[in-house]
Image (cartoon, rainbow, N blue to C red; front, side):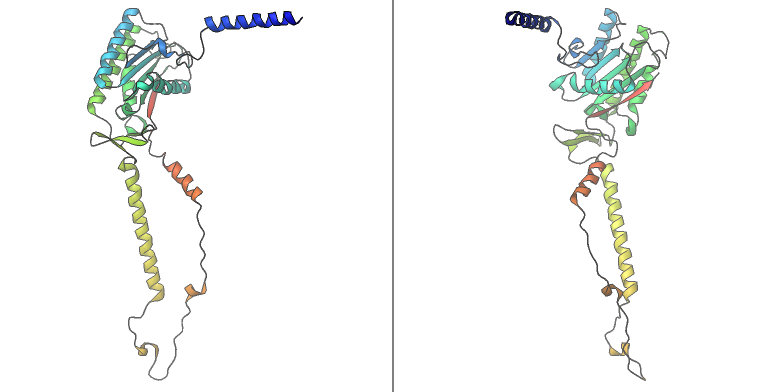
Amino acid sequence: MMKKIASFISGLTIIGLLVCCFVPSASAAYSRADYHVEQGIVSDNVYFYDESGLFSAEEKEQIETLLQKTANEIGFYLALYTAGVSRTDKQVENFADTGSRKIFGDSVKTGTVFLYVDLDGHSSPYDFMYAYREPFMYYSSELFGNRMDSILYKMQRYFPKSGEKIVTSDICQGLEEFCRQLIYYKNLGPEENCYYYHSDIHRYVYAENGVITQTILKPKVYWLPGVGLGLAAGFLTALITFTSVLRNYRFKKTKSASAYTSENSTRILYQEDHFLQKSVSSVDISSGSSHHSSHHSSHRGGGHSGGGGGGRHR
C-alpha cells in the first residue's frame, strides 16, 4: 500500500515538473492585464505593441520608424500601446502609469511618454496619454494648461468615433499628428510652475525661466504667497493688539503729582486693572497634530510624484 502511495506521489511530481517546464510562467519579465513588455520592445528608447492586431507588417514598420525618429528628437523614451482588449477608464490609467514606469526598466533616465490608443471596437473608446518624470513638464495637463488634452484632441480628429469602422490608415495619420505635437511642445519648452517629485534624489524638479532645476522646495508660486500672507496676518494681528493695549491703559506722559491732586483737596484716583485680576493658562499643541497638517498641505498645488496623464473619450 505504501509503495502505491509513493508511486502516485512520484507521478504527480513528474507531471508537476512537466507543467512547470512547458507552461509559460505567469511571473514573466513584466506582465499586467494581458500585457507583456518583452513582446513590444523596438529599441532602447522605443516600445510599440499592437494588441489590436489591426496593422499590417508594413504599417507596423512605418509606425516604429515614426516613433523612433520622434523619440530621438524629443530626447524621451516613447511607448505606444494600440489596445484590442476592452478596459475601464481606471484600468487604462493604471495601465499607462505602470507601463511608463516599468517598460524600460532601470535604463530610464529622462522619463517616458506613454500613449494608449483604444482600438477594441467597442463603444466609448478611451485614449490616454501619460508623461512620466521630466516629460510631464513638457506635456502636462490638469492645472498646467491641458497640453495633453490638446494633443489628444488634435490626434483624435483622425480616429473613428464610437461604433464607427476602424481604418488603420486614419490611425496612422493620427499617430503622425501625435508625434508632431510632441515635437512642438518639446521645442516650445517646459511649462513654468509645473513640477514633479523625484523620489530617487528626494528633490522637486521644475522649470524656472526655461531652465530645469532641482531643489528641496516646490516652485515659489506654491509657497511664497503663503509666506507673504502669513507675514501680513502676523503684522496685522500685532498692530491690532498694540492699538488695543494703548487704548485700554492710556499711559500718562508726566510724572508730576499734580496729575493726581486737585487744588481744594487731595484724593487718590483709583482704577482697577482687569488684566492683573485674571489668570492666564497655556496649552501645548501636540507635535503630532502639526505634522498631520503639514503632511496634507504638501500634496496641494497639483504636483505629481513622478508624472501625470490625461485622457479623452471619442
